[in-house]
Image (cartoon, rainbow, N blue to C red; front, side, top):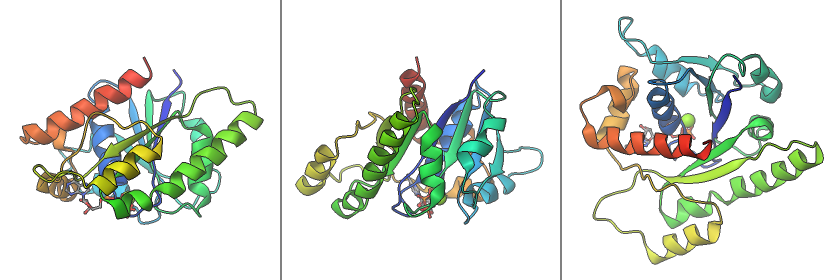
Length: 220
Ligand SMILES: Nc1ncnc2c1ncn2[C@@H]1O[C@H](COP(=O)(O)OP(=O)(O)OP(=O)(O)O)[C@@H](O)[C@H]1O
Ligand SMILES: [Mg+2]
């Protein structure tokens, strides 16, 4: 078993890295052995899991490697134990954590809120991925680093502005078909230490399941 490493990354704060990391991890955990690595000194993922009821624990373990400058080395001790390792990255490109984890990641998922300002603020991660891809090539790393954008906090009935659509098209990174909508349940589940998969919100569940299937399909 060699775990597929999936990094949720974007230097833009508040775009949904932790929310998608935890929900994707919880959803994958129904079928696979999954570990979440909390790479953020804010410790949101760690706190999220610790909010769970002791009789109804978060569906996978969360380990913090925040502050580590060499998470690509530290992660090696987990890769033979899990099917998927989901890494919740900190919101900064000037943080060694992002560079390091992208060296070993199989997939970088970049959550973006579909507004022009958020899309412009996401350009830095695209540059970082290009830089890391060169380093991977120089080091003879042959495994592909897949990349996907995921639109988060979409609002029904609110169409994307022409400017946002153009910025998205110019991005040059494949967008997932699954879109995650702005829903109160995503905020509530943090406090309950759950994922939307363990709630009765079928709309939220179905968009997370759709995203999960797309992610699995990348590796099949
Ligand atoms: N689809 C959504 N619907 C409603 N609220 C959301 C959604 N996605 C994220 N949020 C909320 O937006 C806030 C920021 O989300 P989150 O913490 O996941 O972002 P982040 O990118 O991890 O932030 P940071 O950069 O600070 O780590 C949180 O309060 C979260 O509950
Ligand atoms: Mg976060």
